[in-house]
Length: 362
Image: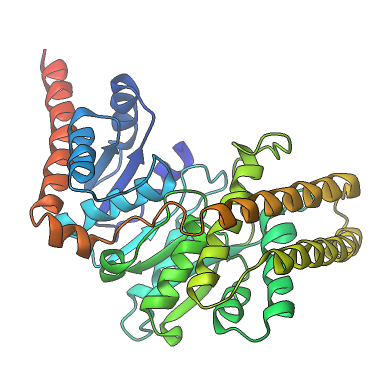
């Protein structure tokens, strides 16, 4: 994160920085707060495990507003709420904190199509190359792309699938959007976040106002284990969440799933994923990259298993965990809740600043 903080110090056009922090103790919150304090302007750390935020989560639960378990989706949703309540930004950009080769250009290119008044996009999705001495991005290369194309070959022309397939990196976690979209978009609470965001943008925006932009020549972040024997973690869990999210979105679009279709999809996906391995092998050879074919085949087998498990869960519970309600609904149920979020986050950060100031004075 140090590289990101160093680069952001020079991004003078950024009015506000909100970092979400979960599964952290008070001491860890204080440490993160100290680290981000080098940034100029309005900087806030949103501490989800703090007593103030926990009271807010209980308020939502007491009012039957289900926001799901702790996860990336819920953390992003609450950060959107703080930004909306503070009313300082008209455009929101989101990216992870584990980007190894971060530069200010990533943020600038991500925001530019949405910020510039003569371009007029409402949503901008980032894409980039994922390689070092070998290819990365296994979930996109070996699961998402062949799965979308397998579905297209089975259900025929479906505008949403065409839309998804148009993204060069649909699982990229970097995007920028008009703040008003954060008010109306619902979010999944699990690893289906990226697919869910694209689905909500498709639902709430004109296609002509959605774009994707090349934000980096190459992109490097921390890699997750395949976890082929454990569906509760790693890429295995990510793959299951993505598949379940996609099934539910397509069902809402009118696609009818039955056991026969799912069996065909599983076989069709595996064939298309295996065919793509040959293509990536050729790409690696001509570009002088290492290529472990056994590792790639193992990934496809793991994703096939994840697809089957996701299908089983979909049939047993088609609705699944409901999306997090959008902020319009929350505000309708609890008109003062956004202001409560703002006050809680500000109080957490200002209390720590006051303690630091007293220590420095002493």
